[in-house]
Length: 460
Ligand code: SF4
Image 1: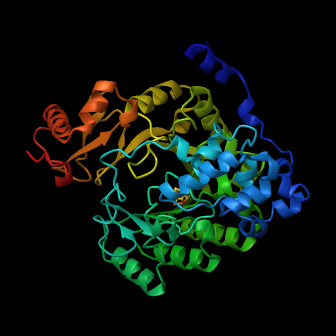
Image 2: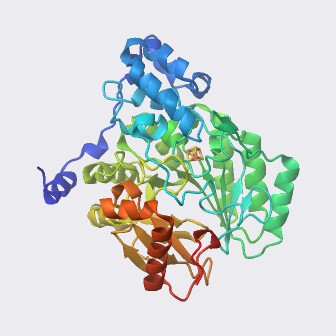
């Protein structure tokens, strides 16, 4: 077996990260054999041909997918809270000769057979965004930053989405409350920001701003840049990874973003893009071309990766992703542990896995291109570095945290997936009384002076 040193050595001495596939890979999908590069490269064709049903998968793949896998997918969407929607770009990058292990299939097309029982402390709103929303569609958790939820749709739905309770409108598990602010909601959100002088930073997200009209990109951007105390705005879009054609072929939308960037610079304010690559398999020649289009216009692009079992938990895979992002002038900024929402236990990792992975990445490339590995703490503690916990018991999988800058006086827990624990620990998690004892024990070692949220039932 290859050792860690051999793997990093290989990463350091190969230039694989400079090469991106540029073949007509979509033609291997039986239903798209005759689709030309011009058609495939048009964002309108991509959106029109998105895959949103199991029947469509069968129709496109024909003999390339077995009835067994189709049935497995179908059962998954009865269990998972997220809707099915995949762009043709990502759908045709999936290795359909080995869909079970494919990292893109794992992220966007769950299989019921891989499902693991939800952790006892999963929450639909794990990050307590609703509790931190002073008004609708605006999350104000950090003192100087707000999250501006502009829409509730994405060109593709990630099965691990932290907002799966809101994104997409409905799923087979029932209708959802959605994020669909109108102009009067936007006015209320702007008024809140205007009247809170400490806010300097606004993340415009949802949802994915690739589905926001160019008029709204301009309206939101200009209104925010007109507020004196706003210094930074970021537009969040996964399109670089899952629909790069949007950047390359929707000129009006692209120009709207660039205009906001130019307007920001004239006022000494920063406008940038935050994107979301998690696997080297998401990157073909289209993505670096899209990143280059932003770069040439002086737009900063940063990336947030989600750390997922079987997607990017191998050192060579994470290393390649980080090097590819740096090569594309996309700054690898964060790698997040998965938030504790329903339906994602099979993708979650342990805290130790994340800390070890970060250690393995240090020194691989320039320090500013090494992402921070972070845990967004359940119940609203905000993002903390994976090594900044007060206490971590790898036997019970419980870590205890504090977040003095965000919620002083409150303790927070994060939990490793139960199926990764020892048999004894798994048995303890099944027993309510043992669970409380484990939490109390962790709290007494970690933050004995602080209380966690009452939902854990261990107030001191
Ligand atoms: S792109 Fe973001 S908001 Fe949309 S489904 Fe994925 S994680 Fe959720």
